Image (cartoon, one colour):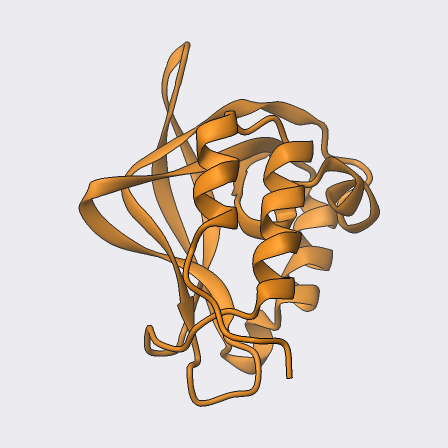
Length: 147
């Protein structure tokens, strides 16, 4: 099995239990040198993704990913459609660095999330065990109305 670093709404263990039922949580950590942002500003609802940023960090949950679940996630994320890429990153944990993969959007950074999107991200982060200050920072991000 390989390790998968889940961020954004995939931090919610209930969500991941539906998408990857054979893949247990293996811990949590931080993507140091990465920033949570939104891509696809030219579409109705931009998608959460990460980009490199030397002064930021993103909380993530680590899953011991079963190959069958990885295939299902690839389909759900739209890998075959070219909307996302899989990359390998270092996740900083209390036990040291671990190498994991994650999805990044193949779209330009831009666009502002809706209030609903940010609420979902904050709820997922909270459910995934993110520290309170991280959850609060998600709730306080600039957003646009839900119209």
